Structures are given as C-alpha cells and as structure tokens.
Image 1: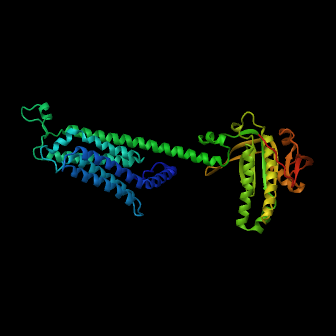
Image 2: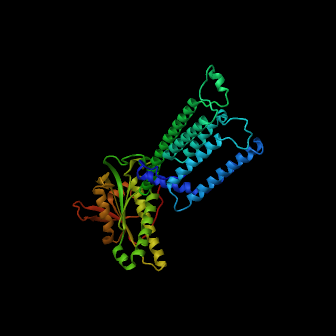
Image 3: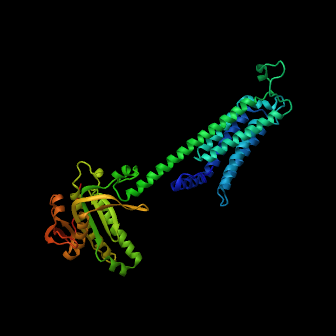
Length: 452
C-alpha cells in the first residue's frame, strides 16, 4: 500500500513524513509483490497437500489471482499516472476476493455440503489479516477503509447465504435452538452482525493506534530535525537537551563568557578581484577553518557574519564539564589555532596559484546577556553586551596594529596568561569611552597549541 492524503492534521512535518513514507513504500512495491508471491506459493503447497483432486485446481486458480493482483499493484504503482484512489480500489478488491474465497463453495467439490457450512469453520478470522497488513501502512483512513470493506463484503456474503434456497434463519415450530445449530443450512444472523461490528471496532482501534504512531513519528522527526539544525550551531552535548524544549534557550540570562570574532582582511577587494564563484569558495574554506577550531575547543559557533564569524565559550553552562579547561583558555587556544591554520591555508592557496588570504581574530572575556531577539515572525538567539562589542572592536584593531590575534588583558588573565602574546598597550576602541589593554600575536606568525 502507498502513502498519500493521510497527512491532514499533521502539519508541514506530517506532509514531509507522508511524502517520505510514500517514497519508501513505492520503493518496496516490488519486494512486496515478491513476498506476496512466495506467501501464495506456500499456500499453494498446503492446498495441494490437503485438498482433494480435482478440487485443488479451484484453489490454485484463486491463489494465482491473488498473485496477479499483487503484481498489478506493483506495476501500477510505478507509473506516473498512479493516483491514491487506486490504493483504496486495490484494498477493496483484495478484501472482496478474500471474502469470495472464504464463502463461495468450490464448484469442483462434490455438492454434499450446503454453502452455509462455510460459516462453521471460523473462516471470518482471516479478514483480520487485511487489518494487520494495512496497519503497517500507518494510514488511519486506509485502515478504516479496509474495515468498512471487510464488514460490507462479509455482510453481502451473509445476505447471499441467507437468501439461498433452503437457508434457515430461525427456529421452526417445535425446534430447539440446539438442534438448529446442527442444521447445515442454518445462518445465525445475530452472530454474523456481531462479527462485522467487532471487525469494524478492531479496525477503528488499529486506525487510532496508527494515528498515534504517525503523531509520534511526526514529533520524533521534528525533534530530530531541530536537533540537526541545532547541531550546526551547538556542540553535540547540548543538542539533545535543547531539541526537547519548546523554547530552547528560555528567558534571558547573564553568563561570564569569552567571545571571539574573526574576519577576512580585505575580503571586499578580494571578492571583486576573484569573482563570485571563487569568492564563495574562499569564504567556505575560511568558515570551515574557523568552525573546526571552535568545535575542537568546545566552543559555540554563534553565527557567521558576512566574511566573519562570532563564537562564544562558557556562555552555555550546560556545556561545561569537569576537567575541561576554562572558557577563556579554550577561546585563546581556538584563536591561536585559527591564526596558525589560516597562515598555512594562505600559503597553500599561494602554492596553488590562488590569491592569499589573511584572517584576524579578536578575543575578550566578560559578562554577556543571552536571549531571544526579533519578532514573532522571525526569532533569533543572540549573545549581546559590552563584551561582544569589545571582542568585535579588537578584531578590527588587528589591521591597524598588524596583529593576527588581538586579546584583551581581561581575556589574558582569565586564560591564565598563556605564552605567546605580547603586550601592545592601551588602546581606545571606536565607540567606547573606557580604553582596553591589548595583547596580541603578530601577523604572519603561525603557532598552535593543544587544548583540553
């Protein structure tokens, strides 16, 4: 069976699930036809073993019809003109054929038993196979349709048996119900109505269970999609926790964090000289370099800003684990790694005959505010505050001071005064009244250290 049209109420995620299941079930059409053929082959072997000849030919003919219907479903499902209503038509035909097989007497058998005797063997239980098969489609409407078809066709078969000549529907004069049960022509209408009602109820319950399963699939898929989206911005440790929240970041909160900014020096001129395609290639290489360094230092890549990037360390308390280096130390290690990798990357570009590129990094440490900003139509998580502004200004200062990395003295102290940077002096940052003591790594000075 195939999936389409049952996504109502599931929303956009439900429609994506429906389309995915449709594609999956289309891909299974041939294996399903093959499995059905093998199942019918097993039935043929059993029938051949137990049924008398020549009556066995009748059953083998019906089995061949079931096989043919299975392959017809496969062939039609692979055509462009396939429509969803055809699925319902096949379900109806399959159910009608099954009821016919269970009720209609084998014309090759000796006519020693009346047709009503078919009701004595509990054949109606085979209809639940239809419900079980449809349950695997996760299509509530199709499952209910199968239940309705089973009840209607079974009811039609009972009506036919009840209207045959000689059929007995109730006790006659002086006849007990016990003796009536022994009458091979007896049709117990009450029992058959009860079976049809139970069959419909079971179908409805299976449909409800299928609907619940669909909702679960939609929820889990949506959670997985959110987790995949979050994983582009956050380390893996935070994804599973944040993906389960309706408002992942909650209310605004303050945190002590190290903030790192990067930028490609002269990217505007580079882009003009290289052209769009080469410029995009350069940008992607630089972004990958930065993302790798930040991730390996257990930081959070907050965003890419044009040809630059912003990353935070320590802004998310749930990411901090015992034994890990302080946020500022990890941020400095990432900054130094970016500077060293950027120098090697630039030399590799030159060796290939491509334009060299220079990355600069600004790093500051202090309090930040975390929260959601934007409007109802478009929300974005933001890390804001003076610390962010200082880190950004330090990155811009690298050009004037000919540095690859500019670090504030606050960040140096929080990182444990790592070796390498030189004290540049006090600098006044644009737009900020209070000056900052700047330390830095000179430009074109590749150096990397490991970090924990």
